[in-house]
Length: 231
Length: 196
Image (cartoon, rainbow over all chains, first blue to last red; front, side, top):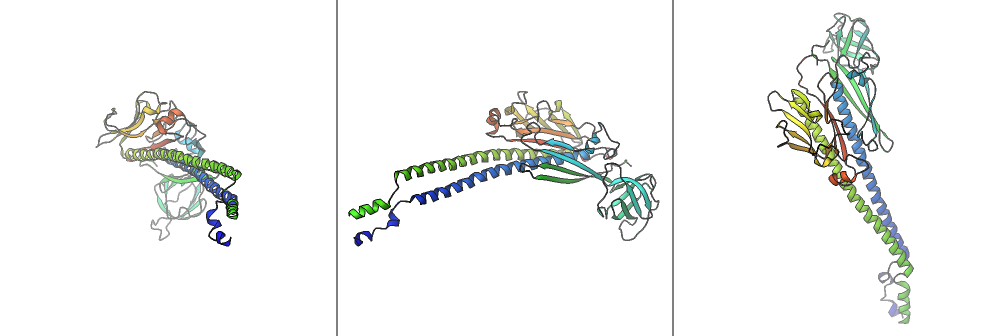
C-alpha cells in the first residue's frame, strides 16, 4: 500500500479547499472595492478641478472689472448706489454655473483697499495716514522700499521713498535711493492726500467650500495705476 | 485500489454545496468587477469630454484676452452675439456666437467662431461647438455698464445645458454632464493717455 500511496501527491492533484476558495474570493472582493473606490476618488478630483477652474476664472474676471474702474471712485466710501465701482464695496457672490447651482459651490469675492488715503499729520520725515472707511491699515513694513506720492493738497507732487511703516505711519526720505535721510520739501498737512506707488491697491480674496467641506481660498493683488491727467 | 479510490475521493474536488456557493460568489464578484470597469470607462469618457470642454474654454479666454488687449476698439454687435475688435493697422476680428436655428436651447447647431470676414460666418474658425448662452435670454457679449474703460464681458456655456444630464444634450456631448461656463472680462490695454 505504501507503494501505491507514495507516487500520489495529494497537494498537487486535489482541487482547492473551501477555505482556499473563500480566501481567493475575499482577495478579489478587496481588489474590486479598491477599484470602485478609485473611480469615486477620480470623480471627486474632477469636480474639485472644475471648481478650482471656476474660482480662478471668477478671480480673473473680477480683476479685470476692478481695473476697468474709474480711478477716483474706486475705494471711495462716497461711491454708492448704482455706480459701477460701488459693487466692490461689498462681497460679490456667484456660482460657477448659475443655471445649475447644484453642480458648483457658491464663490464669494471680497475686497480690501489699501495704499491710499488722507494725511492726518506729518513731520519732517513721517506721514501719519487717516484711512477712509473701507480702506485698510497696513502691516508693519509692508511698504518699505515703495514710494509715496502726495496726490492732492499741500505738498502735491512730492514723491518720497518709504523707509519703513507701522499700521498707519510712514517714515520717508526724499532720497529716492534711500541711502540718506532727507525730509519733505513741503510738509503735507490734513488737506493732503497720498497714493503709494501712484496707485490704488486692491487685495481680492475668492473663497468657496468644496464638496468635502474644506474651504478653498484664492488671493490676488491688483494694483490700479493712476491714469495720466488724474491727480 | 479500493483504498486509493477512497483516498482520492476524500481529498479531491468540491462538494455540490461548495460549488454552488463558490460560483455564486464568483458570479457576484465578476459582476462587481465588470460593472466597475464599465463604470470606469464611462467615467473616463465623461472626464475626457469635460477636460476637452474646459481646455477649449481656457483657449478661448486666453486668445480673446490677448487680442482684446492689443486692440484699439471693442464693440458689441448683433444683440450681444458678436464682439468686434478693431485695430488701427491690421484687419479687424470678430468673435461670434452662431446659432443656425435661432434657438439657443438646441446646442447641436450652435458654435463659437473667430472670423476675419466681418459679418460673415464663411471661413470662420470654429473655436467651440455645443455652445449656448448661460441662461436663456442673456447675451453672450456685453459691455459692462458704467465702467470707466470699455470692458467686454463674455458669458457662454460650452456643453450640456441641463443638470441632471438630459438625453438631448447627451446625444451631442456624450453621456453624463459635461459643461463649463466660460466667463471672461477683457479690455484693451493700449489706452491713449487720458482720464480713462
